[in-house]
Image 1 (cartoon, each protein chain N blue to C red):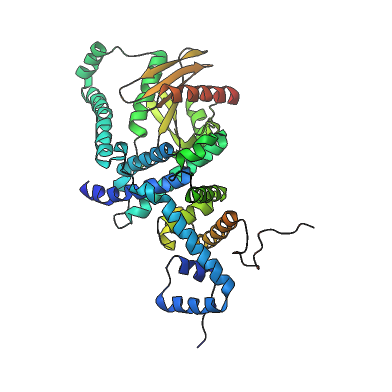
Image 2: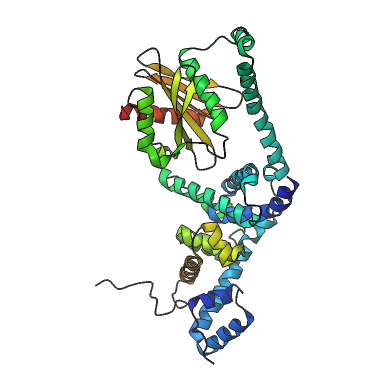
Length: 257
Length: 176
């Protein structure tokens, strides 16, 4: 009977105890005639045991409270509620029609300028950032197409900032509606599942506006204007993350214009 | 929901072990596992119902770890030396076994990232070659070759000899 030649995969399989019994016997026979290979296998088995022993204590440790799954599920449910409630409230205003519109003036005067921009950005963050199906319409691969699309609809040259230097990956973007007209929305992620959006639209007032923070119940952001184009960066992150990122965006857009 | 709890919960100790082996710093490792669990909870409904929960979770964890390790490299951030040594070892390096343990960790650190993950998943986590290939999104043949290279390299580094490496595959080549 001719036997399949013994290869390195067989030796690895022997070490990991993944061989069929018949093949294992063939490999064992081979090792009887090849002491060098047998030595190597023995050393590899030794390594396997050393590695298992080295990391075994970690799995035996009690699981810290913050990794308690029930807690994670509960925290998620709690944090999801306010965003949904905020959106429901927004929806009611829309459905409310004339009555709702009148009421809206009483409850909160319509924001203008940077404030309006910040509000649009926060609303779009609340809608698109948690989206699993289609958070962006054009993916990052179509960066040029995105820039072209935004530039055409915002009627001025608009760049798509590259934040990979700060550790943020462009996911893509889409055109969105705001009370002041079309706006470009870009989405970035930090590689840990945290998403950030940046909204851009032309301002009524030309020129620059200084950067200022804004917050909602579920997100925070920074908004500013540069040469008549308004920007707002929004995420569910601390100031310590958002502020440097907003600065990075401002630097990037200043360069691209 | 209860299905999710039942399938994910028993895997948490192993996820912590893999994260710790990759990142070494216990706090960083648990941060990573927390990220992984939060994502898993959020995406549970997106996962294929017939898919294996273990490979799915390990893949999420692995991808998060790789991103983090690359960011570390890019930012030039590295752990202070006192953190890498005694503080993060599971065994205090006071006796023979401790020194051996430190050699093991040093050798592991010296492996290329893609070899290290294969070696850890197969050896420490006891995953099959096919499962490991799934998690890392590479062909099984690549798992095998990385595994073989990782083992030879580890042994060479730990024993300070290449006696265990077959002569037909020299690790050092003479440069003329």
